[in-house]
Length: 152
Image 1: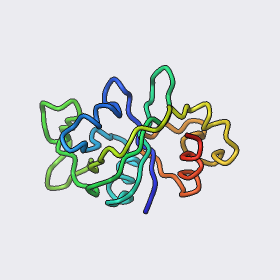
Image 2: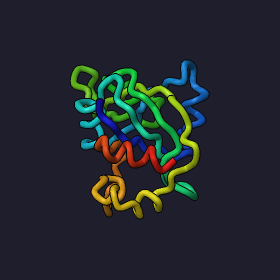
Image 3: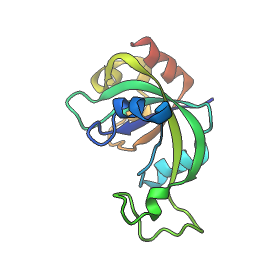
């Protein structure tokens, strides 16, 4: 099993939005960064666990837990001209952008704020707290995962 952080602005898509979806499941779409795409396409597998992270808000931080329920597949929004994630350069025969389906597991007991994550000694090598890292999909070690769970 692998562990991840998936980031979303709560105004665009929040942990509550995921919880309220049919079957509490949703494709994690709209990722338009090649490194993050590679994590979705090549790294994430069914059963992997992920933290839901609210970004670009008053208190950015981890707000929930999700599970990957479908491994990477071509992002349909890239081919849909009506989608805000449409990419006219994309060809369905050679997909560029990928998604995974995630399922809501639970809210964290509280928001685990970015400031707390940055201050925790055991998380100093975590990609999320490194300066300049703005990817929306980030891998975690099992040690990082357990440390964060213990912070709840």
